[in-house]
Length: 280
Length: 131
Image (cartoon, rainbow over all chains, first blue to last red; front, side, top):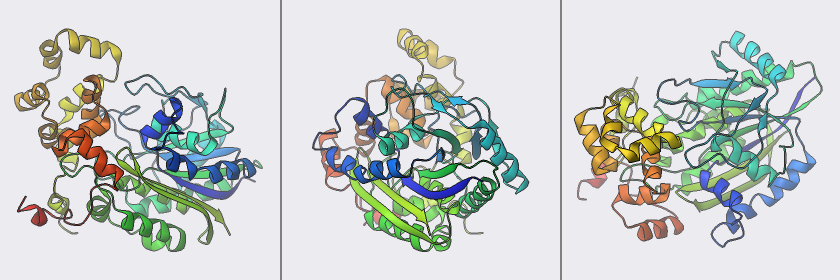
């Protein structure tokens, strides 16, 4: 049967992808950002997943204002990196796992989570940047298959933290009942505190971010109750995307071990956060 | 249920809710069209003619002409969309943020490098009254 052993939380700041794609990760500005992922890349080699279930948000790339699904599950065989206005990132095509994806869709919909099914979808930096930081530079292909779950966090309201947490639990039940011996890793991406818009742009709140990470590991039930108002007020209007980490957390055991944590300010306009959790 | 628009108390912020999304639909569709080179070419060749293909309000169209970034957000624009207009103009996300905060790019970059804008004094509109 399929197994979930670990989860990864990770920012998906576009400038991090640009830094990797343009080969400037050794610059003083970027060094401390990437130093915190060195251990993670070693860990990824030791714990190589067959499939990553990757929770992220689309930035008005695959979805414009015309269609705004709250949860959209990528069931296609492959996903092309999108042109976000300055050419697609020079990274490999993302290979999906249609059989597991459709199993998850069927299972969670019967579990009363009404997902949108995507049989064709381009993926933007929200999905490819976390893969890049965790795997490092790759040549012709990504080391594993990926099932994308795109969550609306652009138009208010996104799903609640509680809803994300419970969806994660349903995803776990689906994976646990899949009849192939594969290792599935869960990624929750986005954040940490940041505000990109209007006069309060540039907001960073390290105290909030630390508390978020502490609760994620130790008391996810309490953390999943953080309100939208608190996210937006304390972590910035775009910081609300941290709800997506709760899908990852819900898919893990209640009891987890924190293997690694990394936090750095800034990357462009954003606090970078990263955590690795293993099931106990 | 608590006041559904309590978030309007957050200073210097336009929460992109369903009302703003409805109001800003054509403005945002205009902005996102600039993701594609052929649209950027058409906009560059004749800005007014290209703008006119999107039935946004005159106020919104004027905000686009003026590159009034905060005004666009106030009228229903969303930052991930307006950032495409900025990119079309050769403005990076961080430069756009600096423009919206009325800080110079250097000062904004320095603020971010030193840890960003503090949450203290920036939680509620009541804290901004003297600004």
